[in-house]
Image 1 (cartoon, rainbow, N blue to C red):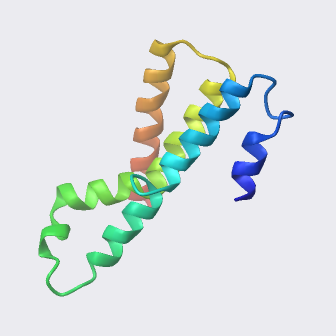
Image 2: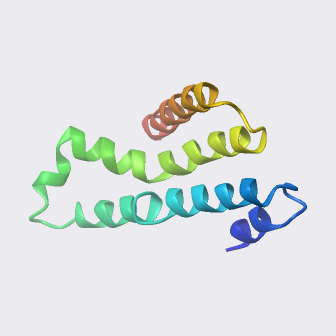
Length: 107
């Protein structure tokens, strides 16, 4: 919760729209479609009847949702703060996703 507090503070950025976008990005990266959702699927994968979560595509999705989502957000946060144009944000998003996958593979 401290991360949300820091992102919402006026000292983080003068523009409240930028701060709002940062808070939304962190909420998505850490919530049901990000880290928390990936962790739930990871826990489900440990159950005996969870063979469908052992497929390579499911494992990759779980990894992308967990720390991958937070790494993507960390990269995107810099672009948000810098007010980077859409093409740069898309390129940085692809880089953040690749970095997240590399992190998971290195574990």
